[in-house]
Length: 226
Image (cartoon, rainbow, N blue to C red; front, side, top):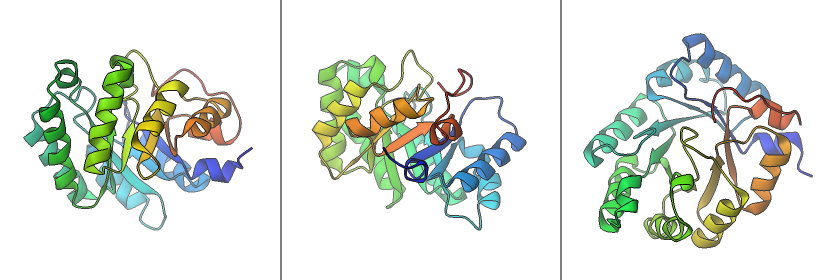
């Protein structure tokens, strides 16, 4: 069994729903500091506020790009990533263009990811696949592209669609990308048991709004991030 502090170091403490207030973000940052979470995952408009609150801590600022649909112009995603990094983001979670995947437009999918990766200029990039919308073959192909581009992580879900992370998808993603690229499980992870199952399957980052419940071994509620 992992210790609470070991699990905490893998958690992106998440608040991405539209109604979050300044006070919610400040509380998120304080909880991340108190519990030793890896990062806070927030919308980019809150980066300056979080940067100020986290100034004397080791907690990273993760933000989302092309969120939650992934259907933006690649140039817009690129600009969004650049501006987020300029504002203080230290990790970028971008959403893949799911429609292009479903259309078999793999060259465009690769170019979309590559453009954002280049814009990141060494800042860690996680690519959200939205696995609940993909076939197993599409998950593998998307992971192969991410592996070949050498992104930082592949990630299961936005948490804003019809499903979240599954142990089977995490195992498939880990098998495909190998050991040199991270795998982030996100969506529906609200308790310690689920988090540990994802880690055992190959995840080395957990995205959740229920981070406190996870590290304290408690059952999270059904509100907030999927």
